[in-house]
Length: 326
Ligand SMILES: *Cc1c(COP(=O)(O)O)cnc(C)c1O
Image (tube, rainbow, N blue to C red; front, side):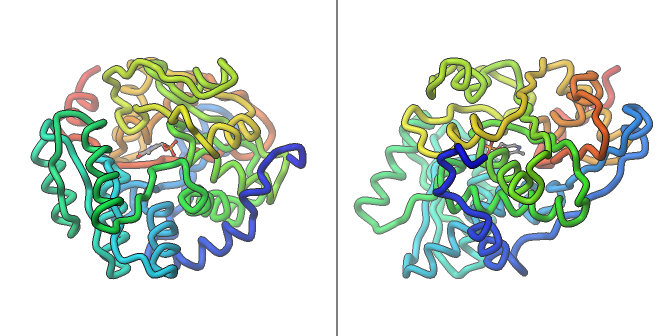
């Protein structure tokens, strides 16, 4: 760990993030899974970010970033994410008495637009692609004094996500293996960083979908690369890491002991298992840890395995199909 260029992030930052999050973000439960523990012959626990008020862990990073900005006098924040980060930013801004704007393309479904608007954000519809929505967000920054809050590649966001690692190690100090969904790497870097600062021999495993795993491809190439995006059940894991990635690429490279890629049938099985056996509604991205375990891809070691169950925001029609199919 000492060889890393991680001097930019410290455990003290994570403790400060926790103070900013107190009372605004849920201290989520860490619960044992009887079925999976029996299945692998070692204790398996879930860290249930599904119970956050916006249905995903993204509230941690967004709240920490927004609280930081509020302290430095910023009044308005903007992002271009339509998914869990957009919701989280809208919620965090509202809670902290700030204005927020979420830029979306005209192709974003009305239910997603409504969900963000219901959280108090100004919804700005611009263009026909995510790129055009991003350009609109930049215009709001330049012309209307909004501060941009990125979904993962930001030290305040990473420190917020890292509070998950703190909570896990405090609840279960002998955690041996940490299994974390991986896309842009904010969640993985934060959780693995905090866990390894407290217990350096924790094994940190990232899990992505095989289709369009940008971080995995970037690590293989030795630098951030673009990958072709395709439709996946783990939709919250889609998207690139940014060719100008500043933090999460280096952090993930330094902290990942292993990265596992899953096919779509495995992700479907994870969502169905969560519902049928664990009585949990989990979105595709949130179910990849369980899916990797069910696939026998997590090496068994001495000590508990903790799976971060990152979110619940699945389209209920898709959910119904996944849990009723064989
Ligand atoms: C954003 C997200 C992830 C991935 O987080 P990154 O920080 O981009 O790696 C995983 N699960 C859910 C539910 C998410 O919303």
